[in-house]
Image (cartoon, rainbow, N blue to C red; front, side, top):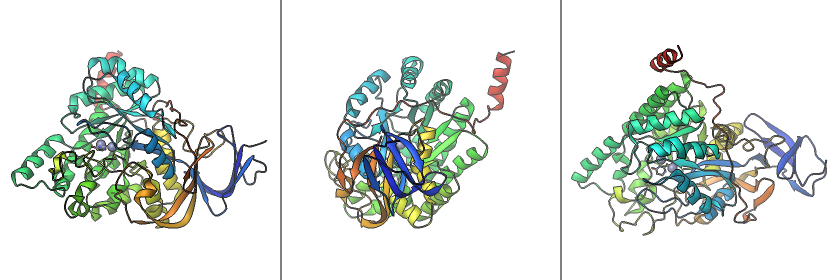
Length: 482
Ligand code: DUC
Ligand code: ZN
Ligand code: ZN
């Protein structure tokens, strides 16, 4: 068989094993994996390198206006370029509905924005206005198009859909085989803390950390999981930042419920001390839920190691440290008026590889599972996230020994800071491919705008974790079918 490309001499790492082998690529797909492969119009020497599935970034905000109207600094070109330099071959940013907007309109808006992507992409919807039309027509049509996941919020004035709205959405998603994601923080608890802090004049960035207590996340994760169990629906809990929240996820999974979850590097790398940097510097570290403390970091690592989390995502939410982003409401804005979120799409994989694999906290196979394979399975990306014949040739070739310090320039995004600045990391994705095309090679971009394609995704597959109906809904259904 003749191949377009052969990657030879490398160590292939999948979610289940590590072995020496060659990979033959034809027409954008992996055509063969074998001990030794001859031929190839192009032969890439991967000696001393790890050959892994390209990352799938399943949580990023790109070309997205916040509910308050602040546009992210990255569009689909800079966002996808940054993702690629960070070892990703595809991503799934959010397509956000603003109140009053139809789902068709949301998707048309993001289709136009995503047309410049260098890597393959899909979207998770954000639903803030679950009207009858949205529930009965808009969402089913989106699911039909292969946009099979959506995120809801339990907090923020303009996003919080309340328990009733969440149950409605969970029910529709369940009926259509879609997956509901949740940002879980108790809205009233946060609002109350904001008022208590304001009354004391405590409005500097460092107070953001205590304005969103661990209890607020724990309560909302518990509630979201409970609502999902009543609705008989699967749920994906995003950006878990607390030990208590992770423990609630762990318990639900031990009970067999189809509950999935992620955490993010910032909750493992940063603490509330970062929010207390001099002047307004702390604004750079404002994200929600907030970064916590070193005890929480240790607990989150244990949960990663014991299988509570399916993935580690960046939650890339790029707001610059200037008047277009963080400081839109002035150089001394109180913390509730500072844009929520930090960049990290290029740093996610190098940070996790270095702190996880290199430091012995993670097996390389677990790294692959957490950064590509699990996201593909959970979010219905059929042809990506694995190295096997027939899969898209979405591959990242890593030098596991290169040591470098994180710089802003290395992020290749539109930001003016990186929260990971100066950290010393070991391991670099040297070559990144999307469907067999080399898009990044030794620090140079070869990918072009518009090269990425929309990924129509499958419905959620609950094989192996079907869950069980709660007593009362089981009785209701039994009565109904009698
Ligand atoms: N939630 C996110 O997922 N990202 C940025 C801000 C937020 O509240
Ligand atoms: Zn969120
Ligand atoms: Zn996010």
